[in-house]
Image (cartoon, rainbow, N blue to C red; front, side, top):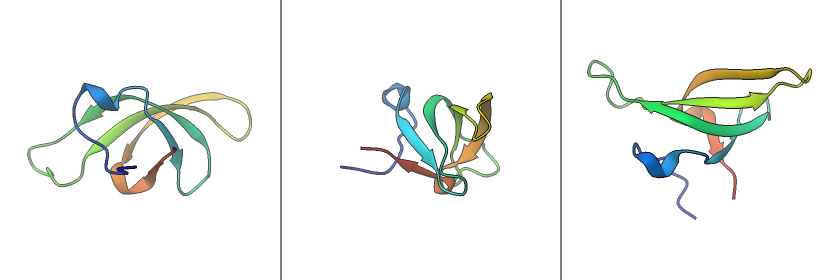
Length: 67
């Protein structure tokens, strides 16, 4: 399975794990910035370890695609 995240609509609803915390969620948005184009960002909605519904931006290298 290709673990690179693509900046197009096929990335929506991709299941991911946040590497640092192990929390899991889905991608609901993405961004690429002119000044920092090599660092793609993905907006992830997930449930935090304490049970709260959370959403936040993460860089691609902070995420692991779940298969």
